[in-house]
Length: 223
Image (cartoon, rainbow, N blue to C red; front, top):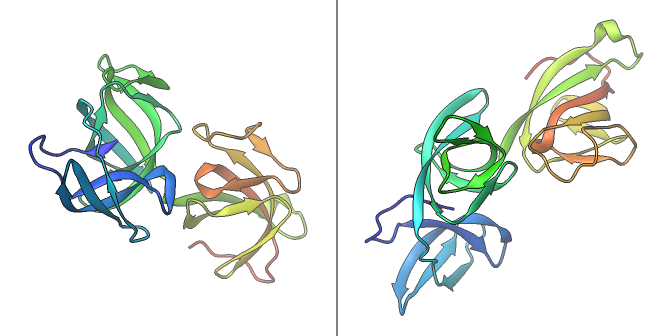
């Protein structure tokens, strides 16, 4: 996917995989120059400069709703009209506030119905959530196991931050051991929606809820 722009004028920035730091996922690139049917690009993530032949596929502009920390806002992207979209896919979205990586959570068709996959030409609105930096809901049990003293809190961490069952984490003033986690519906690659065996690992953007045991000597306070 790429940000919307004029068909007659090349945009200042494009979303395209970087051969140096991100061959699978698109990153934002600055357009430095054009010539000979190719463009010179600089990756904004790693500063790698390379030349590419930009695709000339017919595109359709689609509305994108981005959910971030309980708030939502709208932007748009240009999508090749023959591209197949699906819940769980990630792409780079540019908004007035920032450029961010988002994950598709739902696809809305022209008749207002919601589906998990569809061709770009069928989709009216792409519903997404930010996954670059995420809020993780945590249920924290005290050391002594008294369930009446269970607390809930929210951790703000990078989307790729890993939690592993059985391992102790130190985040700011907090110290806890991960006991189990629930997996988000839009996450892929997990064989169950709840995992609680030592060594089970999840990245923060895939966490629906994290269950932990407090390892600090004093009570936690919410961030």
